[in-house]
Amino acid sequence: MDRNDSPAGHPSPAGPHTYRMPLPRLALAPDGGHGPLDGAWWPRCDALELELPALAGALAAGLGAVVHVTVDTAAWPDVPHRVPVPGHLILVSLSAVDTEAHTITLDTGVGKQRELLVVPPGEPADAARWLLTTAADPWNALSAPHMLALADATWER
Image (cartoon, rainbow, N blue to C red; front, side, top):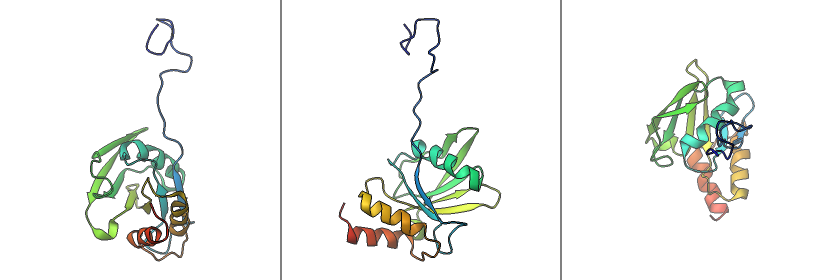
């Protein structure tokens, strides 16, 4: 038997076992927002290298291939500088600018860009749903830090 519990010399019918993250929890403003955010993303964990491929894949049809992202250092302190996705690498930059706290900027390299609120993975479900809905409202004028402060004041973690 090999590592896939198949007889030696015979490939597993399902091929090698790989783990793929579920579809991202994502809400987008139609045609981009008019405020500081274009929507929100609620990752399941704080490992960007695991979460980013699913997010980039979900956005590819409407945005194109994401080639660069900027995340804030507070939310993603141990992030790699390159994340492999099918077909290419995404370059990752860190920002310590307060106005970019709790956001991810996704860039295609051809002028298309989206700024998303990053809902903390441990956020209570009710608060996360409110954050996703509010950030996806095309007329939302609230910044990511302001929205998270409102959610913290309303729902306890």
